[in-house]
Length: 395
Image 1: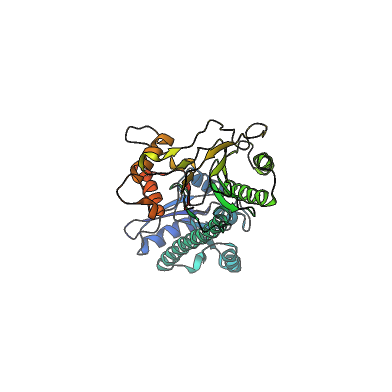
Image 2: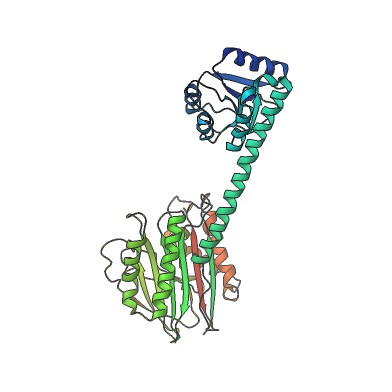
């Protein structure tokens, strides 16, 4: 249980760790004299205090005597600070005043000399300690948020690259939306590269799971794919090589990656598709002309099996085609019937959106946004990342 933030309408919960009955009585009388309402509990030893905290009864402030029978010097303070919950205010005798000052340097919020304190002084010190601890938590949370934002930005630059494309007849619209249950990008990634021979290469993938390890692995796979493609390696060797990389780089032997690659020839009339456990792309047309490509040659995800070759599927492309590649976050929403959307449901949405009176081809970005909005409306929580890449060929 986390300590609650200070509230003037509620008593502060204070745990006094003091073995001396006379000193404990004095502290009680000081609180009685002070204009501060507290819910005061006492522990006679450090061990008793730790058991109280372990039971989940975390106070707002701990008044800690530095001279306890079961703790020496700063041992008690270090063990109280290790709870990372309440403010810690140390109590010391006059002859140990320097020890109290040193305790503040070691992490205590403040210190008090027992025979030099009165009710108002004690109340003010407790309020200050609680507020300072609260401010420390806020600063730490802000620092952590900034660190996560910086990490997120670095990973985003790796996962969502700038395409290498010179063909003026091609347009690319890409969208990436992290799931609502996370603040960090997951392992979805994509990339687009145009080779020196004019061929267009596209990849989209999804590392299972969420978090920095999965995102870092996604970045590694994307960069590896781009490097392999630009090196001119035989197309049949790209996925086996990436499979080998994943097996060596993953932090968990259960991690795998689904992936789709497409290579469009320089004439833009033919495409070679390879699927590694990934849903097939869609060729987007006017209304009923939209279709999901075949998954008849669907292979195993990367990281599963022995990394054997993935059979290619040859696809004839119509003039001025539009291709939609996506991760499974786009098709995992539930329809009103309760069924998962999946590729059949996505096809219905595509036909509905592209069948509208407005000429969607003039604004394909709006069309893609419309599809993604419809998908979001099917589920109250988008728990998985969604990556989608729309390739529009005007040749």
